[in-house]
Length: 324
Image 1 (tube, rainbow, N blue to C red):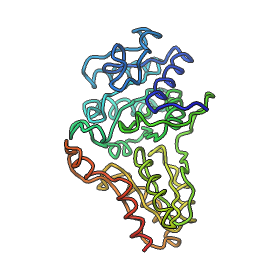
Image 2 (cartoon, rainbow, N blue to C red):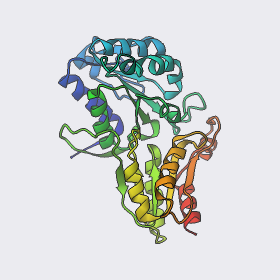
Image 3 (tube, one colour):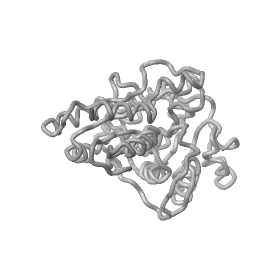
Image 4 (cartoon, one colour):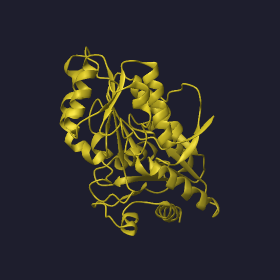
């Protein structure tokens, strides 16, 4: 096992895929000479050259169109969209073209493209650079949506994404970039649609995504001192969703809390809660509780930013109320 940061896991895994397969290349704003806004592609330009580490113009639509077009001709692009907020400019290319070609060609055309982007709060980047927009993309047929919470999960899911023949949206969280964790040194992959139990427990199941997994683990540690045993499950991919893992856990614990940074309204948290209600109704002691971000623009100030998204304290309060 090697210990590395989330950011370094991106760089090392990308480099490994570039060495393994000459059809893989990276395209995005400032991914080359600057090495990515967070340093996640630092040094790749020097090793692989500008033909495979491509600094794009400041046009998410053009970059995404280039990536999809090259994928149709046999390349395996990794297209980095700097901040998920700007993915709105690329959504026509992604949703109306990239993810539809396989269906429209009756399965004859593959589109092996990975869209990497960063979302979430923690950097005080205000309302146009801090959103959690993953809810939108779960509704797109043909698109895989992954949200790794650890360096190890990121490595395994990114390898799977690059090697997949389907379009994949991999959403990283800005507040995770400098977290560290153990990463296996072998060339492993993580299948899409396989959840992971980050902490086993007996009294309540906490289903959390991305950065909220760390908040849920912190809450579970606090609640353990109060005699409450929390099982923390990370779905890792919002779609496909490992429904069976959620159901099996809740049938054991009889209680469930779903935690997302994205708002509850019209969101994936409602889908997860519905799966639990529909398949665990007889076992549930109380209805599923959701702990989600507020439906608001993200404020700039530190205290206000913290006030609109869940943290360990919010999760602890929800669990205590559920078990009261």
